[in-house]
Length: 300
Image 1: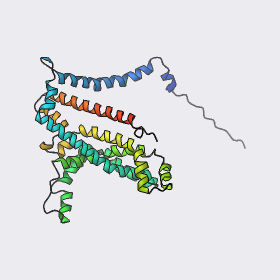
Image 2: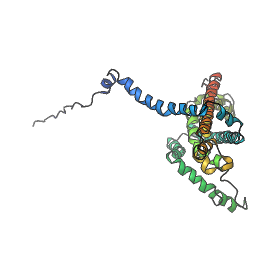
Image 3: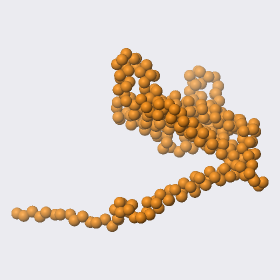
Image 4: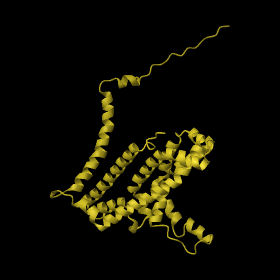
């Protein structure tokens, strides 16, 4: 009895190997040119256009629009509200996100770690508009929170949670938590747990080891997460527009009002330029602080 062996003959691919494509003269530069052209066209060109509109008018170069941003009471009030709201949201997000990130690091069960991480990340999979509108339903006078407080006898009439700073802070904090958690978790996961164990072995209590060893080593995550949340908070539009009132107008809403209502594009560009410069200043300040502090550079 004979056995026939079947041999498969490899069929050559019609597509050329990737290394051959990369080796074509000039192709690498062409592949780099496409995203570079896109970046220059849609990012830098728009930034230059904003700069031009903010410092030029029909009479030529002027700093009048920039001056109005820092002298007009309305613009100063909006800048103050924006900075205050961004600071409150950053602190609230950090206070909520730090325990979550720490729980993810110390959790032994990979299954539950995935569950907690999924609960944190699921908010990023839902439309920002849907998440914000959900908070309008929850925070309204007849919403879940007010009904629960009234049923518990803590209040006799609904408290104002919507169309004020409280609503904006609650909504923005909920939306920005994933960014803070990811920044903190990325740093905490790299901390050597043996350092904490060594501190406890030398007589430190668990809370002392946490405060004196773990927390200082997590400061790079605190800095990066706070910076991301604060910068995002400065330019948020949908959430403050839906959850805040006219008395809590933020800078993004003011830009929109100048463009659509008053048709003052130069003023809107000047406000945008101030916001852009403030962002660059924060990034530079964070980089300088990181260079000056060994802990923030991740040195142990």
